[in-house]
Length: 532
Image 1: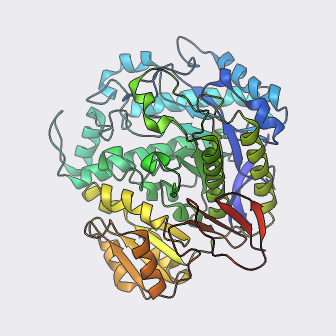
Image 2: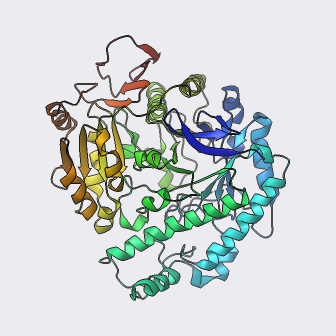
Image 3: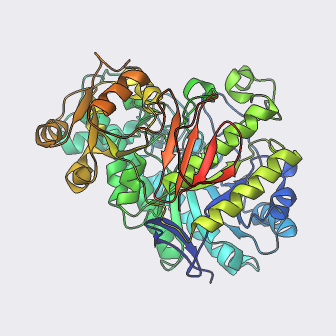
């Protein structure tokens, strides 16, 4: 069996296949009939993901997006659907390495037959249901046994376990996955039983329970998959969008639970959709990336980067908003470059999500992606450790007390334009890393004991961001850094990523301030330098 693992290499968690480190750059599309596998194979890509669905249901209960393909467990067992789709990749790239995105949401027939296992406000599974969990585990068992017995088994290197709204483990009801089963389990734990429809908005403990329930379910499913692959392949999932979705009802506020998991090897999210990914600003991670790295987890960013070739997939109003369109060709190239450089210099993996197919189907795009793949491969021999002198800390428990939209979400814009690189952690990791930085920023939408202790013990210059000052500007942040003696890479608004081996300075016609002997690898507005 082909093996895979996550291990330190170049000072950061790295994907290994058969004990060989890989440049973690992959390709995936939802509309597999409109794939560009051949284009990416010709560009040198060998790492691929692909969708597979247990049931033919919408992946988004908000937009009601129609299913992408048949479910393999609708009205019987239909592994030929998966076999056909993996065959498309192998026809284009015979030596492909594939980690399927397994949407284990159950078929409609199961949910119709089990009304007590569903959410109160929508006809989809409640993640506290033990019957739902056992059925999901049973189908995962059958599916992975099929894969391991197939003639393509040695091309499958691991699994991404997906579920919930948009496959990202958002609750189907977007209220925390609240149904009879979660209300029963919470009552057993605390003695508080909420009747259907009863107001629980003042119960912070209940919101914490909802987040922990989903994180624990991900861990349990990952543990089961680990057993099925004899612990020899990687398993991961979307979760922990602490910075992008700092709202209690998303139930994404228990990332700390998954960081302790022995079964979850990688954690995923898209790049931030801040300001519909306007050019000239940073598109930061949705989660506290550096806590993942500290705990040995690989982060996979989903670069669903829009281009001038991006088009909505249908005429639904939800998919005809500005977020679904990309900029002009020249700007699209700059954004692709910036997204690649963010992953490279922050020491994590990425996949290009050609969502509806054809988003990168132009010679200029494929030439750039081929070039970036070569840079990623070359970087495996270098230290990819962060060179940041600024650390940012946040506490998931603060968002459980109140939705922290302005304090957390919008502050990242200024943070990404302050002209210096930064790392970002959960505050629970503060004691382990505080001595590595010269300036700390504490994001405090609400007071928590852990954040209070960290601020009180901080021995270097620091700044606390609250509701009162979260509209701070990049120039004001730069003033704080300069006063504290922190070196800047730009004196005006600029996106800066920096590792021990590379430096990226970008933005919108930003003047560069990096001097000395450099090797310019990618030209244009945003520039990537090889430091040594």
